[in-house]
Length: 238
Image (cartoon, rainbow, N blue to C red; front, side, top):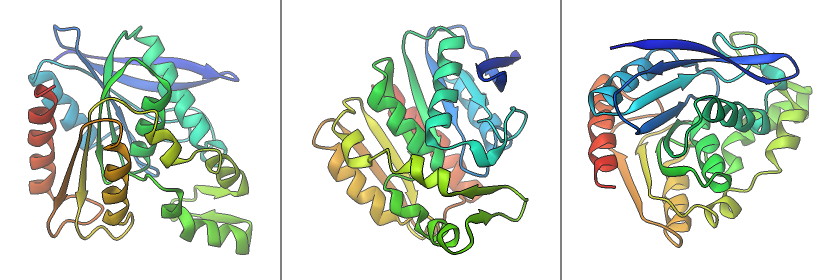
């Protein structure tokens, strides 16, 4: 399975690193990782499955994560959207599907709301409403920053940027099919948010919402395998 690694300029002399898993087709699936995650691990396996189903797959690190440039504290949703757009433009895609996990799901939704090239969106445990980050926000309000176990941090600038993006507003602009997979016992992003998101999205497009019993924010190996299987079964229906 051939892969190529690309260093893609974004802005201010900073670049992101992307891996292209190549297939002999014109179908593309771009993966957006979660908040404190990167393009490794489950994304490599998802890309391998994508290729086996005839999709060119791209996984990349947002700035401040993995192999990409930049300080994590300086990367809000606006910067992540710019990173995703730079990756898509680098590969000169006329049409593509997006897969976003957790905060990567929020990136995927807001990207789909502004980019007519997006043909479908698949998300796993997506952050939709900004209230999912209220716990971090309260720490920033008290201590001026929220620092994570690995030393990375966010401050008020992250939330000032986040407030520019409303999921209900984005939902009115998304007119492509959407699939949402969410653990019923998610301790980080309330599954009720995905229920509400599906209701809003369903006013404009077709939505599949599957809740996975006894799964939390991080899926078990069995649930991850089911996610991969169901993702491509659903994509083939479109």
